[in-house]
Image (cartoon, rainbow, N blue to C red; front, side):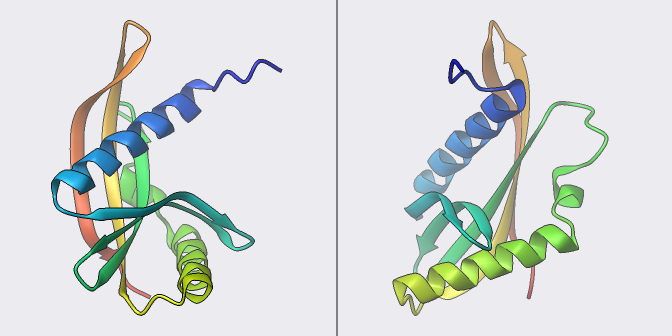
Length: 127
């Protein structure tokens, strides 16, 4: 096995990298990336003030059949909430949780993933 990533994995990583940079520029502090537990994974955990944002990043190509927001269905939301609850418990954090979605549109150019669109949805869903 070579360790090379699939196109979907490369796109996901590029979307997460872009979103993390965007969050930092907005004044967020990145607390964790790709945090995993038995309940699931959170792409980015970031703090702003007294709020902790659990961010699901969805990277898509132009014209994808399912929008990034549609991809975060009830099942995915439930897994995110369970993983966030585990993180809050593990860290003892008293921060107010919020669930955000970052929608990143990527196009490939010369073997690299370039961001051609970005939307960020605060409080994309509630528990």
